[in-house]
Image (cartoon, rainbow, N blue to C red; front, side):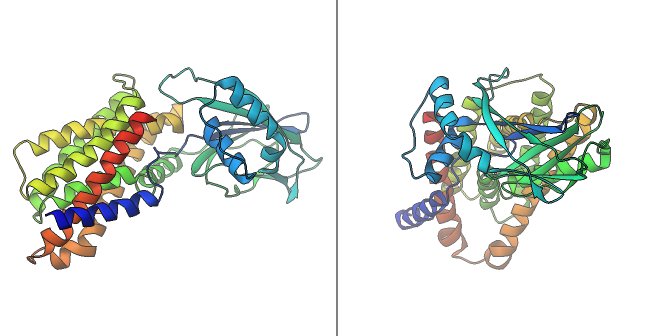
Length: 366
């Protein structure tokens, strides 16, 4: 047993080295890009200030700052205005536009559950007779939303970009058609899937913890059903404002739930009477975590329900994909062998437990 525990801890160390301990980043940066009638453009970039500052300092070879108050953050970010401007790329018909950037605001959003935010204001000219515009921002590490609109036109288009990807070209100063319900549903289904695979390693480890309990399908289906029902309930209730719990509480408890199911896997190989109920309780927490991400994604008001349902379906498809991949990779071929539990289940569960405990402490401290 000790040998397997050490092996699992080694796997956990490798997982931690991959840099997966942070909370979900999807949607924490948002951009509102507006084309104005006076042939200028502006872009409001809302983003967490401390990760932004650390990224700029690392690129400049400076020592990363510790905890700073809002005034100190603003002062340090102002010193990087030119560096930020070089990371904002706006092009009209393939030609780059001059960019000026300033720090418009740093503070606590009206929703106190959200982290401290900075609003950067980028601006520049629109060339005469320009037909198309593209956007690129090099200071974000994950999926983020860019809302394009034109002054005097009612339509707006939201594009989801991956890190430093360049947006598809959009027409300049023309009426942009709003996305259809089907397009919005497809968009949020992809975002729900991506929130788990590849960006939600904590949820992946929880699902794998459920998978590792037993080689039989009935225990797995019982747990997955309990988890799905629970997180679907709190996802909907939280998004409609019926229940609310701060991420400062939810995120450590999610990490602790990962450790719990993995530790129980090491203690038993059968479905206990209390396990489905415990998984259901943990599912309620995970649903609140999913809702926190959806708040950052700013669901379209006119298509709130289709986007919400599609996001949840994307989550389910991702979870089923994780289980299918794990089954096809190992269990399908080796689950009936005598060494399957001591050589695979126990070390993997130990690794997941160690990772979950590490995240629990890290998120409490953070």
